[in-house]
Image (cartoon, rainbow, N blue to C red; front, top):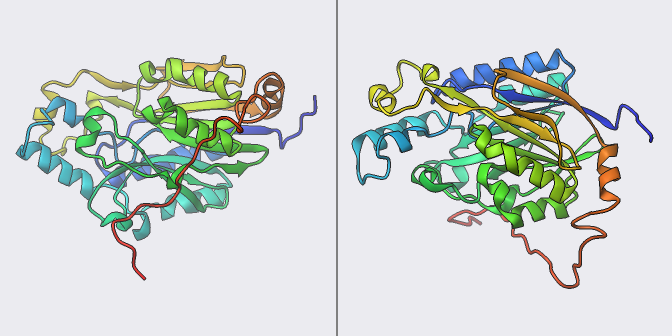
Length: 319
């Protein structure tokens, strides 16, 4: 088996808590994690879903579905003020660090995009290549349950894969990973390193990580955030109301890696606060594709095919 440095990829799973609903504070933590990873020779670092500036935990804790409720509206406005406007340069410092350290990045953000009017929020997964260039912004196709009260549904534009050394990487947000057709859209483009990002907790990562790896015969990296009651900033609006029903731990991590045989390389980790490192070997992909390849020799495109609309959706078309 040929093994060269190009076969190997050093990855970091950044299992951290946000400075909740504080864009600048969370950006500072993200930058610190990148610099720390660079000292370890990391080539790809992954952060959890919506880490910047955090997951909308208040919805489940403050009767978020109640109509026209002041606390929910005021927290949503605070969330919007701290969301990410890529066109305004909110990720420029992250891109500069990526370029400086030749490190690719998958980062979960709450995006407030100008091409959808600049007011609605999307749970987006951003891929930045090793040259510090944003290559795709995948807006979560279907927010889950109470997430729909604060996040808008995305589109297929971000269903893209990217070259990284010998690997081809792609990613999905949280429960999108349970959706067969978006997974197939990435497989069909040659994905062999799948990134699954989560707001936190091993109940999300303990089953689907291995399942996707075995189904696709790919490496799967699942990265979750952390969140404890002590992580809520003291200046959070309506903090007392949020904490009244909050458990001590809202997100316990569970970040992990599965190999192309569907077995854990790193089991779900509920202990580490910080970067978790591992080096993966591309040759394992070819080894496991020998007996099964879902979009290659073990597929029948003459019978079943998937159509994918990757057009970026907007309410208007200006000429």
